[in-house]
Image 1 (cartoon, protein in one colour):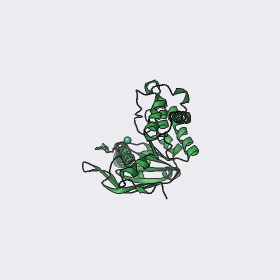
Image 2: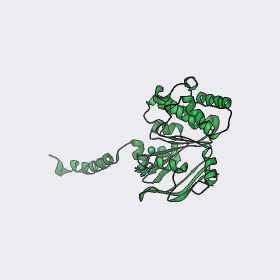
Image 3: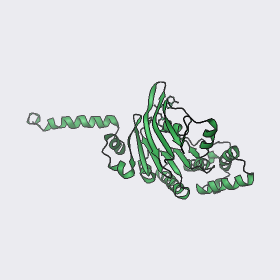
Length: 267
Ligand SMILES: Nc1ncnc2c1ncn2[C@@H]1O[C@H](COP(=O)(O)OP(=O)(O)O)[C@@H](O)[C@H]1O
Ligand SMILES: [Mg+2]
């Protein structure tokens, strides 16, 4: 059974359809990368997977429970199995890195403070921040902030990790380090990872499968190789990074090009 199963999911804001009947299964232990242009609904989909918003119609099953219809108590239990790091790392600036991670444990568990300290240390060690536990977010580099946010997402030992554009705004080397961390988490904890990104090298490094959103639907879902080989023009356009209007202009130019080579055009 897939750990997450999305069926006919429709989301509208003020009557404007953002997600138009999505279907997607995410298997246990799989890294699923969501690709799509800016405003294509990637974050909207993540909010649905976290049950932060109700859909207009359709269902989202997480570990067999439809989170669009379950009780608040069921939702609370399920949420503990999902760790989230949103687009803006959103760490508490007034708290040290270790307290940012500890806060989640203090809120959601009854662990003794000494155990919490130990768990926090382990989580920070996993993301390579054990030596920086006492620093505050503003003292960290961009990459370290993201890793701290990942440590916090890992606090409760989630089965599912959700990352919204983890490498946005990072330089390529730091972004690549984050990719390696994601791969390590999958290896070490058999975690199911859902990552929104529009960094193609990152997507192709970490993904088991890639799902590409286009105008509210998935235009392609497949393994890295399947996506790379896809002849779907929307996928090709995204992979070749040609903006739509430039692609159209090129098509028009190519069409008229042939008239340049007719006898009438010759001087
Ligand atoms: N709470 C909201 N209310 C109204 N419109 C929204 C809301 N959230 C997102 N949208 C709109 O939905 C579309 C998809 O947004 P989003 O999921 O953030 O895209 P992405 O993450 O792919 O860039 C955008 O057009 C955005 O303006
Ligand atoms: Mg987004």
